[in-house]
Amino acid sequence: MQRILIQPFLSGWRCALLKDGKLADFSFQYPAQEKKAQLDDIVCGRITAIRNDFVWFTLGLNIEGVAKTSLFHKQKLCEGRLMWLQIIREPWPEVGKFGYNEKGYRLTPNITLAGHYWVYNPLSTPKPNSKWIRRSAATDMLDDCVELSDEKKKLTKQAEQLLTPPIKIGIADRGFTQWQRWVRDSSNDLVVTCETPLTASYVKEWIKSFYPEKSDSVRLARQTESPLFEHFGIEDRWAEILTPHVILDAGCSIDIRELPAATLIDVNAGTQCDNVLDINMNALKSIEQQIRWRNISGNILIDFIRLTKSAQNDFVKSIRNAFKNTDVRVLGFCELGLLQLQRTRYRPSLFIKLMSQCPQCHGDGFVGIA
Image (cartoon, rainbow, N blue to C red; front, side):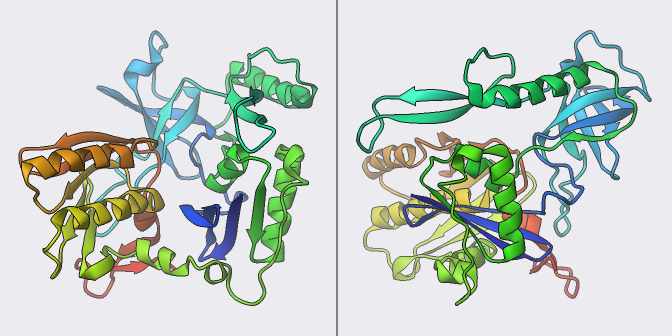
């Protein structure tokens, strides 16, 4: 069973995805009604500058973005021209003395309007060993499913509008937030739990509008005896992902530092030096979780405790198995003995989103954004 938790937090919502009672993912986003561009949004931008490999756009709402010049092929580009674009990467906010927001949103003129279709999997479990799965698809896919006819008509109208030159800048279509993607990709065995009636009302209305076939299987409830994250025992996990220091078993720990060029992770053995391989294995499990929960992306360098050559060969196999079914690429160890990982950047990590430099000391300290 999958459960989605949604709780008002600061000026937005914090969300968690639980699979079979275990924490699988964290997310933070602003309410959908707030006018902020986000991943997959279709926007109309005005060209403000053309510089070498990039075209710069203003998108309205005091936001800007860039697209690679090579994506426009034979289209004539000139300052002041209006064009339809799609957001493929969110900007990195400025954190401390590091500027992450130099180019704004990353854009593409190749727009995708996602539809859905049904896939039948006869080998899935549990019994009777069969299941229908809903998948994303392009709008021109032929499908006789009556349930999707209205959705196809809506997508067709949107596609026709994109053929017409835009008359003003701004957001034309809103993409899914992270919790909405969880609902979209989940099976029918799903429970969505909201802390407040207002949040529950909005979520229920959205599910009825977009996924009516899941309305009966989705139960919305309010936790009154304690805050939502405390009730499900994940409040400590949320606090953990906003600190650079994570305590492991037997006095071991890992330090995580997010920098503009790369994220550095250091494994500390503490006083336990008897079985180095076990310490690294324990740290590997925690690091895989932290990368997923914190949404760390880009270049990742990990300094594990040094192993013998024979032990390191076994450890490399364990590393590849740990990241086998994830979007993390394992590049192996470099000459410095650091493990190199890569993960495509689409949106900022939770730490970058929710923390800012301390206004008192202006040093390496960070405080939560109110």
